[in-house]
Amino acid sequence: MYSVRMRSAQGGAHEVGGRHISGAERIVSQDMVEQTTNAMLERAFSHTRGKADFINIVVEKIQENKVQEVPLLSVQTVSVCDVPVGRHTAQSVLAQAGVTSLAAQIGMTALLSLADSMGGAMLLCAVTGRRLDDTGSRGVRVSRMDIADEQGVTALLADRGINNTHVREALVLASKVAAAPGMVAELCWSDDPEYTTGYVASPAGYVRIPHCKPLGSLLGGRVFFVKPDVDIDIVKDYLSHQPVLVGLTYR
Ligand code: PML
Image 1 (tube, helix red, strand yellow):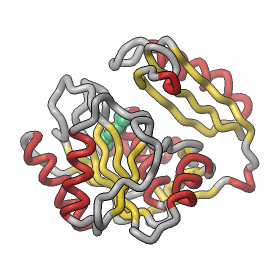
Image 2 (cartoon, protein in one colour; image 1 turned 120 degrees about the vertical axis):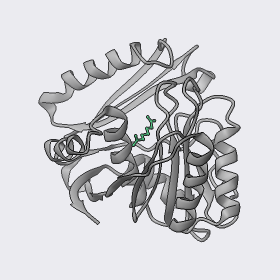
Image 3 (spheres, protein in one colour; image 1 turned 60 degrees about the horizontal axis):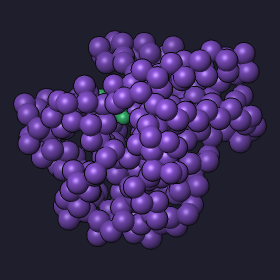
Image 4 (cartoon, helix red, strand yellow; image 1 turned 135 degrees about the horizontal axis):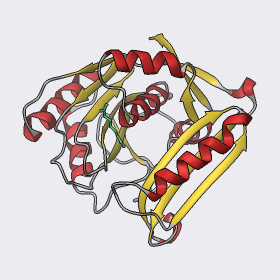
């Protein structure tokens, strides 16, 4: 099996200040590597956030016995009428998951005050809201994950009328994140200006919230809320390096 991952930016590489355009993650068999890298290239060149002029694609062999299988989070969509209600709902779901209202407020404000969207995520203490990672405006990238049973997940999402790339990829990422040591919850909305649905995910499930941001906004990102006593290096290592396949069994 191979981890195939892509990140793209405009104005040069991310490391030299390029603006993040898009990213993608797959774990595929060798015969699918070429098709996967081609699809990633095409995606980097045709993203709604702009045309990338820096594209980094890494193909790396992974040992199958190192792959961890984690359960797919259960999915529900709540009904909200506008952005203020959407954000208020996100805060309530975060509270139900165990994030204090102070930390939820700080996380929400952190997403709302981004100067540009982040490729990775901010890690905040779920009690105090203090930022615990040291990755600045790049954030911690969640990497090396895919779906174990692609047909099964596609069928499940199609059955609910939500089988699109945003949901599929976000659900896989959120399922990996929810299984991280010390993870309490995740808050996310997309940086795609044409996509306004966000979500709060936790080990209890993936709650989709329409209208987390206004249509046309390029600002989006992710905040992960973790327990105060967690070893942040272990969490970062799991998120970025542990290969994970998301299975169809629910928690
Ligand atoms: C992203 O595209 O970066 C985030 C997508 C959020 C998907 C929310 C959903 O519709 O379930």
